[in-house]
Length: 100
Image (cartoon, rainbow, N blue to C red; front, side):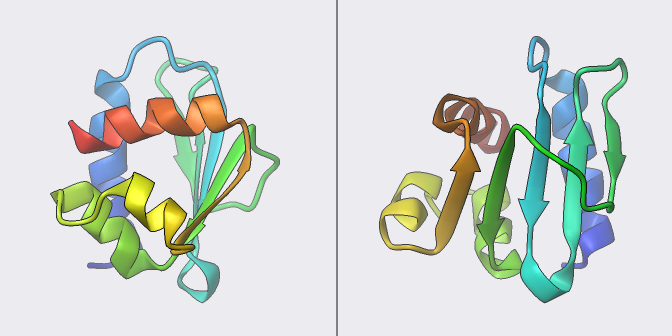
């Protein structure tokens, strides 16, 4: 799955997520970045490296597992496959949005 395909999936999920007023960054290392600014309507999504309220860093393959339900984000975090910088509460909200 490419960065563009993941971006499309995230965009669909973010349009359904109401009340998430935050700037979120998904950092896939050399594979790229997805930045979401949901403080505006509709949420702005780009591949720019901008300042975020929470940053989730992992391999793209791990993130694909989150999206298709084969990888639990909580387990990935405990195993060190997912790193979170910033608001842990916001990361938990994202977990619920991405799993739906």
